[in-house]
Image (cartoon, rainbow, N blue to C red):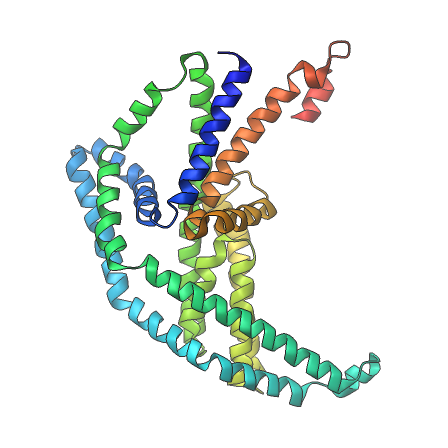
Length: 365
């Protein structure tokens, strides 16, 4: 097969895959979730197999423990979070009105006059800005709540997802071997190398980032609840779980927490400073301990690239797109680095009359 035919074949395959995801995105969620669970738990299953347990019993043991933890979460924690979310959405307009009044009454007019701005105009602009931001956050929260209800539906969570995860986990090694047998024989070594690099990138990020999100969510939630912040448990968990998007989780949690703290604690500044300090400590832990130790540079993706992938895949394929955004971006990154390496070694880059010197090759790498 010529190079042109190969490129056409893989481009057509990519288009078919994208169309498949687009058409069936509304029903793929439990299957994608089951695949993610199987992928995350496969190393544990392999470890149990090495200890002498059969694949069937290892799969049943792991999934039973996973579902048990999930059920305990739903029984113990989810009702509390759901009540806090419902109350937060109910009280949100009142919180915004109190925050606007607080800023209007306490904003230093002298500072506005020094800056050459009319204090009333500035306060009005601030109120409008807060109102627009509140409207956006309210719509986003309601959207996430309705999406979360769909995500946590009994059918997809307790029936389809565990069944899909069970069969995939049971047959994981056989499926990998079967796919390996379909690979083009002429490029077997290269494809295996790329697949191994992709697996390391995806596994390192997903397993590490899940740990980071859970640790940060627990830290924020417990810390905010201990200082008595209203909705602290909910805000902390949301901030931790959204922290897989660089700076977004902590930023969202800080803004919401400071807004609630101003309404609740004003004028007691120590409590407001304590709320800000919690997120400062969380960012220090994430940037200096959790991310380097648990995630590292596994994906090789710049934070801006990661955020673009999340927004792009989310826009194209909805919530399912956001689930597959990071793995897909990591795989695309591996392929892009491979393509760049091939380009730098090709006559297109080097030319026929001016071969690349050793120093230039080293700089390129």
